[in-house]
Amino acid sequence: MSQRPWPTLVPYPGSEQLAPTEQLRQLVAFALQAGLPVALWRLPGAAHAQLCLSFSWEEALTGLPPNLEPNAPAGFAFFPFRDSDHNPALFLPANVFFDTRQTGQFWVNKTGIADFRLAELREFLQATPDTTSLRWHQSPQPAPATASFAEYTALVRRGVAAIEQGTVQKVVSSRAARQLLPPDFDALLAFEELQVRYPQAFVSLVSAPGAGTWLGATPEVLAEVTAEGTFRTMALAATQPLTPGLTPQKAIWRQKEIEEQALVARYIVSCFKQLRLREYDEIGPRTVVAGELLHLRTDFAVHLRQVPFPSLGTDMLRLLHPTSAVGGMPRQAALDFLHQYEGYDRAYYSGFLGPVNLPQAGVARLFVNLRCMQLRPTEAILYAGTGLTVDSDPEREWEETELKLQTAGAVLEG
Image 1 (spheres, rainbow, N blue to C red):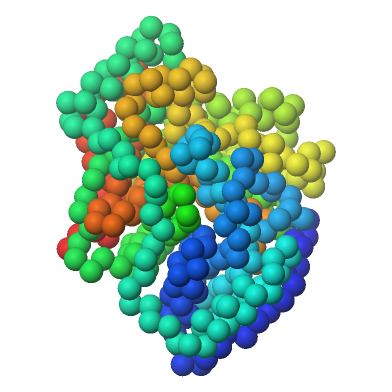
Image 2: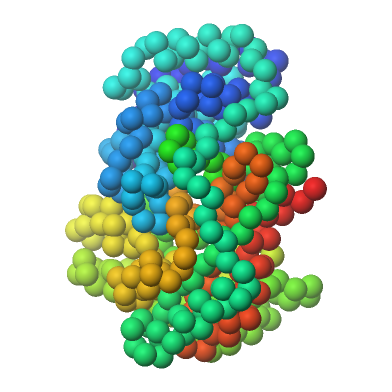
């Protein structure tokens, strides 16, 4: 399984005087000034950030999930929880790709674009632009409604009642919270801070017309296809705080949490069965650390060279999203419940994002957009959810959302 080559390496003007983070900042500044979409990310366990910049906003609009085959178009996927006119599904074509590990140059893919954009970029970089104040893209949609303690616990009780009545097996409720941005908040510095805080998370900063600006650090893989030909996904569910002295080996899980995680794992197996795939590896569940939280996780892998499913990654992506870990089971019944009772628009929270067919990233690395926030001019909208089963306690579910809000929200502390 070979990735398609990137066509052109371009020298970065004046790079010998600039640190990698400043080069990154300049590329972001160009995208924002030109009204273009841009995505930054740091892969789990990596020590370097990467950037994708698109020269055409219109080409980023798409109603379909990306193809996860080696010769598919290169870019960055940014998909909402539910595709709608308010929250368009985006695939940002990678006209420019920059890796802070390889300073002094960036990749350019000029397919389908005019040379004038590249000329504009070079002129912008040569002018040593001022990047101290960046005007990030803003969502045209109003800020979502936020839930009080009373409102969220009422939603949890309604969800538990739906489970008891047999309407759903599981439902994943969520809420939004608003927090003022600290004075002189810098999204790029916050992106760097999240990388330091959460070295094993997928850290991202995405800004696009129509979608706004989103910052986050998620622990959950949705779908990966490696250059060596392996498809991977995971079932990640159940939560408890990582308290002093507690290790994954010492964690004790309640029956509610064990069942919650098992439902997610069974959903993944059911997707394999829909494709009539029997040859897969399953490891877990095991306890893993994600920031200041513990979760139960089961890993799944398929060796694509050993099965007759060349488009398995693409097919599984379309079956998985939105997963039972963010919606519930049965999927449509759970989504209908959330649409009727959750009380706000999730937008890109619990959607998915990540690079596809970009250098040093494998064929595809897509993650569920959890532990994230939407950045607005003076405030951040933070999001968190909890998986409900028949044993859910409303107050404990509220406390779990409070813990999850602290993951990305830590960078908002003054």
